[in-house]
Amino acid sequence: MNNKRFVSFVIKLILFTLVGSFFAWSFKSGYYQLIIDDSEGFIFLLKQHINMVLLSSLLAIVLAIPMGILVTRPKFQKLQWLFMNTANLGQTIPSLAILALAMTWMGIGFKPAVFALFLYSLLPILRNTVAGIKSIDPDLLDAAKGIGYTPAQILLKIELPNAAYPIMAGIRTAVVINIGTAALAYLVGGGGLGDWIFTGIMMRDNSYLLSGAIPVTLLALLADQLVRLIEKLVISKGLRQSVTVSD
Amino acid sequence: MKKILSFTVIIALMVSLLSACSSEEDTSASASDKKVVVGAKNFTEQFVLSKILAIYLKENGFEVEEKNNMASQVVRQALENKQVDLYWEYTGTSLVNYNKLDPISDSVEAYEKVKEVDKENGLVWLDQSPLNNTYTLMMREEKAKELGIESISDLAAYLNDGNKLSLGADAEFATRPDGIKGVEKAYGFKFGSSNIKKMDVGLFYQALRDGQVDVATGFSTDSRIKAFNLVNLEDDKSFFPAYNAGITVHEKTLEKYPELEELLKPLAEKISTETMTELNYQVDIEEKSETEVARKWLTENGLIEE
Image (cartoon, rainbow over all chains, first blue to last red; front, side, top):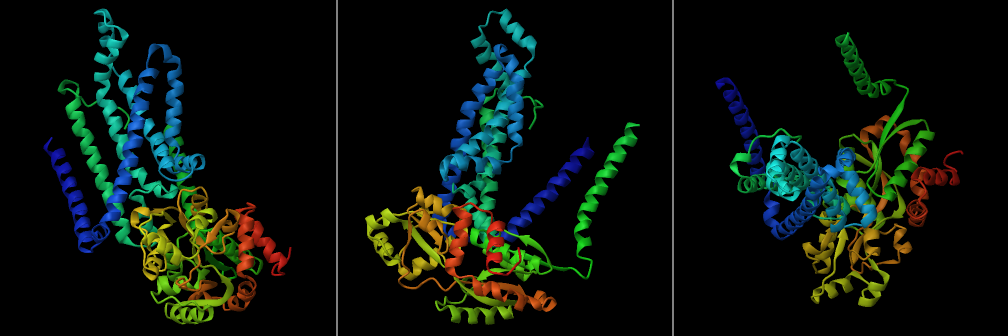
């Protein structure tokens, strides 16, 4: 018991020291001066980035959860495997390819970026919704039917609350991946912090590179914590078990 | 049985992986091979020029590896590190961008200066071509007429009057000293960073044509300017330097293959701005492959046999 704790403590210590020294070095080298020098530009790109992520994530949530619910209804049992296989297949398509396809259909700019990000975020949420609902103990559902719940009541009072944890985990994963993938929006003219990252790559300029990449990383970490907070508020304590779901 | 099978599969995979890694080194071991790496930037003209260079060298007994699609700074560093042996560069780009010197509009002067400076960097400029591919600022023809903008000074006046226009530029043009920042300084105006839309190099012409931006960066030899009804704003203050194309070679490569200088002379001599625009047209508008276009040009000019 103690051994494991000690080892994980040491590993955490090493990681923190490495990350900490990286930050110290990059700060001292003045790589983040750019954010201050061009704060107008930075805030503009940051807002663009957040807008892209928010819009695509919301759209994905609004579509994926109902789809997940629909697909687990007894009527659609037969279609379930079709949906899940398509979803899994879709996830293997690299985000860059989806961006390129979106660009050929929708031109350049904000729209194709949001569309591609939306498509890419659908799948984790859909998969987790389905897995979460399917993992509910069938005895529970039986009992609910037994006491006379209508299908709608079963959905709202039993299925969704019980699947809430995996669903939120899916949303969390999707949002974090979304923030990182949004950095590619530069390639389709969609803006966001990726503009600076690519500028840094092309101009061999670490200032641009780090001033773009580190905020994206921090944004992802922040989003992760934020969603965890929402989880704590939304999901009642009793349901907060560690369910083993993919991702 | 299963264990033996899985063991064999793993060994087989490892062997094939290792042989794939080492096979690259084997080919450069034979002393009779003449091998060079040709680099290229990330737009059509560069693809065509590097293809011309590569095919020509291959037909003259060289083994050529092509590394395309790099941004200016990247391919330049690759050359300096000898990861690339030679590539087509533009005099103005090296002068202003890499060497941080003042722009020179006269082609000959610019060439002489940059040749001298880059010699100290260990790079040799072979003959420059008459091809001058300068940056331009473009607008849609009707919009330019509507706003009465014919030159960059007109644009500056329009924006300084409190109007807003959006600019489409790539990461390079938006950051380089001979890019938009230099233009804004020389002409005394500012687009404002929220009005500059950054996008990949190939997308400007489309974005401008489709109205997603009002002004865009262009390359003067790009055939799409005419094809999409775009106009170049006149650089009335002659801000943009001469950007003649020439092959830059790492000095060690030239020491190893001194015949390159004589061999590559005709290439530079025969490529003019009009020629290049025509070749670009064949690739961008007629959608022919760069290889096909390069081969055809070399054959027509008697540089290779068909």
